[in-house]
Amino acid sequence: MTQLVAVDIGGTHARFAIATIADDGSIALGEPETLHTVDHASFQTAWEDFRDRRGGTLPRAVSMAIAGPVGGEVIRFTNNPWIIRPSLVKEKLDVDSYSIVNDFEAVAHAVARASEDQFIHLTGPDKPLAPTGRLSVLGPGTGLGVAHLYREPDGTYRVSATEGGHIDFAPLDQIDDAILARLRKRHTRVSVERVVAGPAISDIYQTLAAMEGKPLADEDDIAIWTRGQDGSDSLAAAAVDRFCMSLGSVAGDIALAQGGFGGVVIAGGLGYRIRETLLKSGFAERFKAKGRFQELMASIPVKLIVHPQPGLFGAAAAYASEHRKPAQ
Image (cartoon, rainbow, N blue to C red; front, side, top):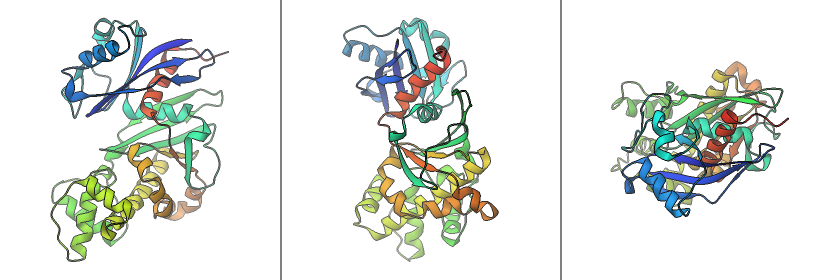
């Protein structure tokens, strides 16, 4: 049995939990604690805060899922001032071993390890994700995370983080054209992240309003999401449905590009919050609408992962993959 601290660090929150990896490779998470990044000058002080909350002692291993590029001598965060120097992790945190992975790489590890009851079926054949071969994982949040998962016949797997959220947006109809035209006024190049990440709902909403001759003041994207979900604003509801359609298009493109024919998984808190809308929207039709490959796309199971802490669970899974030999 191995114990470690699993950490999921974003721009706003740093989530911590004690994880236990059993001899058979199964992973259990303790109750997570969420700290606000603005309340701490550095990751080390946040770590010390969590350690104090746990009675002053922690396991001597850590795995960190980080919202940003990893692998360099200095890891910087996009939306908070913390930095992490991997060469100093053992000394600063007083641990014997560590893993550092991109946050969406961790989500792909969670997909690889999660049980079947941690997934909701969205479209395609209602069957489990393929036990071998390639799967695609993506999730809209503040940006669009994309990763690739390959399952080996012997039960092992490999994960690759990607920057698939930055491929070009491909319009399919006049409304998409109008959304692209609006975004091009601010961005020379419009990536899919500009259309299928949480903040994009504002541009979609404003585009639909302009098409109806109803110019509106810019407003908080959370308010639009709320009205689009609760039925109080038909234009906001149309914007949410358009978002879901575009997400379906992008998910299908990612599957084609990665060869994710064993399954596609939508992840992230936003995906979970709009799960009912996804099921009723044009997501499925857009996912399949790939011309000559429509039959192939219709054969791919598409799921939504509903694990409550995929980042923490995935961080622990990434540590197990790196540091522990498979059970014999």
